[in-house]
Image 1: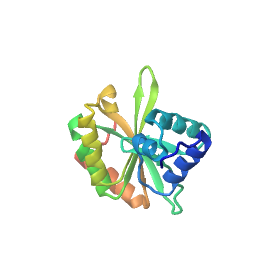
Image 2: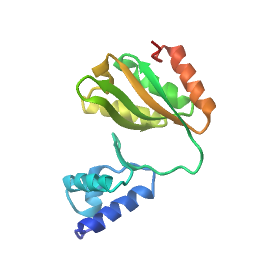
Image 3: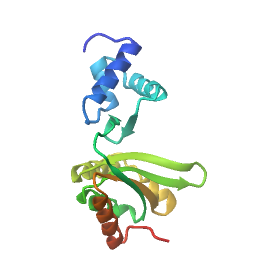
Image 4: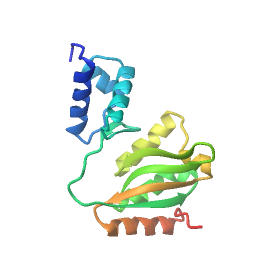
Amino acid sequence: MSEKMSGEKRRKFIVNQLKKTKKAYTGRQLAEMTNVSRQVIVTDIALLRTADEPIIATNRGYIYLQEDEQETFKKVVACQHRPEDTAEELNIIVDNGVKVLNVIVEHPIYGEMTGSLQIESRFDVKQFIEALHEEQSTLLSVLTDGIHLHTLEADKEEKLEAAIQALRHAGYLYEA
């Protein structure tokens, strides 16, 4: 797009782009598509969120949370491991057909902190780990001695239970 859009038209365009795919769009990609700066997109996303649009930010970009037509099952699990075991933990989960929606830690000052992950394949795990290294970032769980929660989602309860058993077997399930 070569012409600059009005704010309202641009925000409608952003929502439509995000809704028509499960693909994540980065702020830079949306900025290029609408001929504005990335910071304008960040502001637009904030405004859309305040208007109750279910847009989340992941390490891969912005995603519009679609309501799945099929029934899904969710469970929150507590895990603990060393940072270098993160890829193995996530791969155990996705190898059982389960999606990792987020990571949650309990910070002594800020309270509950949640990071959206939306990881559902080994490819997603690889991208997440690469992004951590490229950005020289740390995991939220380093704030809590490796203890963290994950919200898991699957189309069958059996898949959730299999993932939980595999985490237990690997020693990653936190069971006080």
